[in-house]
Amino acid sequence: MSSKAEILQRIKQNQPDSVTDLPDLNLISSENPNVLETYKTVLKGIGGESVEVADYNAILDFIRNNYSLDRRIITTIPELSEVASLDWKKDDPHTLQNVELVIVNAHFGVAENSALYVTDDILGQRVAPFIAQYLAIIVKKSEILATMHQAYERIGNLEYGFATFIAGPSKTADIEQSLVLGAHGARGLIVFLLD
Image (tube, rainbow, N blue to C red; front, top):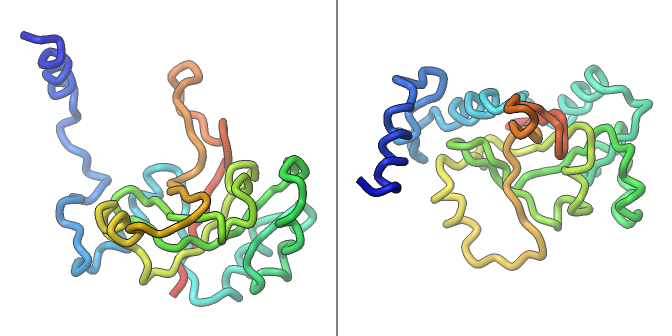
């Protein structure tokens, strides 16, 4: 038996019998009304939180009730200027080390892995979602795609300077084989699912 075949056999033998917390991702399609529920389930499974909101006023209320407004909160979204600063986009990125919360929009989300697609034109600065203690991303419910295949079809050959998918808070299991949130970025991610 080749070493490759041996490794694959060991992986197959050590798979869990079933994963009951996650939906069958093979059943997700754009016609499936459970895409939003799948997104929320997967996000929760990787350490994120989702909140369904009707409008920006609901987001403002949530932030006022759940975050200290004495801490530095920044955003790229004018509708949230009551609770967050808009005048930071041209600052030296090194001055963002004390940001408690960054709030940005996403172009779309992906249900199968709860990823959110963001580009530099909506981030303000590329470093923003990675340097803040907490990250909030707003995505329209109608912009949740079922699979990464659909996501890459949508992206196509678009031109952009920087783009990434963000899924859940920062996490690593490198530290003594224990899962640690916030080791290399945001300690928490909240996704506002906008009607």
